[in-house]
Length: 498
Image (cartoon, rainbow, N blue to C red; front, side):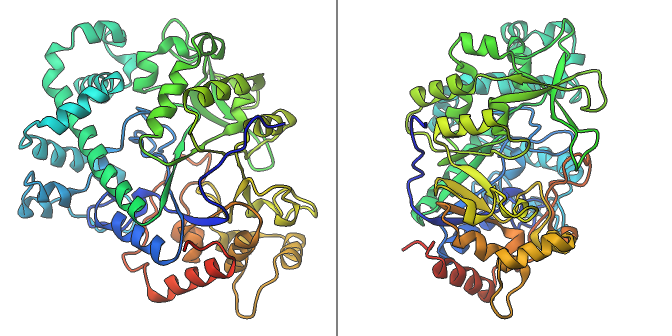
């Protein structure tokens, strides 16, 4: 039985999944500027309680926030240019050259232009007491991150395992960081400005009664500050390359499985020091979010281990992970933490046992519900309200396209389980079915409220290397008609805030 039950701080509420990167902005990607504040107003006007975002970490090759070069750092692209102008760090004329109203995020363009803009702003920044306090409070990760990024620039952004041997050694690099001091200052300021702007956004959300749900990936990228500074925590060989890597086994969707390529943890070593690496990482996450969704929760019960030399996941094996001991340590260190477990994928008894033990709410995705008569994802099968229901996810089809792809039997089951009111679309019937469930929290991706197709709004297609994480919402999404529809369904299902 569970030793504790998660209290998220509310009962029977709802929210919307909307990545920061997808917010409206004239600067090529969503930021912490006007688009974020307008979306919070939208949430409040539609009587929502939560805003769920994707990881706020920096992105690198592949553009995925789940393959970040730094688990504790924030994405520089989210810093709003207009706010920098308001601080007199940029001029109105200078802003013009950084405008980009592309319908999708162009990460190549961002990489080529955004850092130049930030460097220009930094050249006019005068360190003050607030900046110095931030650097002091975040010294544990900030100095290593700034040094790592300074070395990245020095080596033309090449992977750290290709650097000169002396700089592959974090201890040596720390002792001899003097020549990189100026460049480190830039990267420290970038993190300060990210944190300052995000804090203002989060405070505004709180003023409107909105909680922020964040996301922590289970793994980190091999080419990351995390692996560079703590290589002993990972399964690496003498050349600091992964011995075995993460992924998931072959299934009906991927006959070769999925080879993600992240280095695996040396769990026995992590356990020996009380999981300090994890506790620091999770503590940092709660400086950014109110509630934390832990990605790939099943990997804390047992994880899939693939030989690093393999191109696919066929030869992977399952290995045990110390999930119970880890989350006991997290609860002892961070007793007020609010956590959601992403318990999707290949779920076995050990995963169910771990979820029950932690008391964390798991996830119920309705798109998984209509393939057999008694699916655990069908709302009538929920045996507890301690769960979070979704119509779909950032890794799945938009519900509009998903429904059209169902076979005859699944569509019959859908119509039986999920009856529509007169004139209601299949997408909105799915949304209402989720909202009507007993789940304590219902989260609906913004694409589903907009009834977008995959071509218009899919965020990520697992195992496809390119074209992901690019979706941007229309500048004109916030219509009175849409707000009325969302408000009505929220009130009708009694999930509205007062």
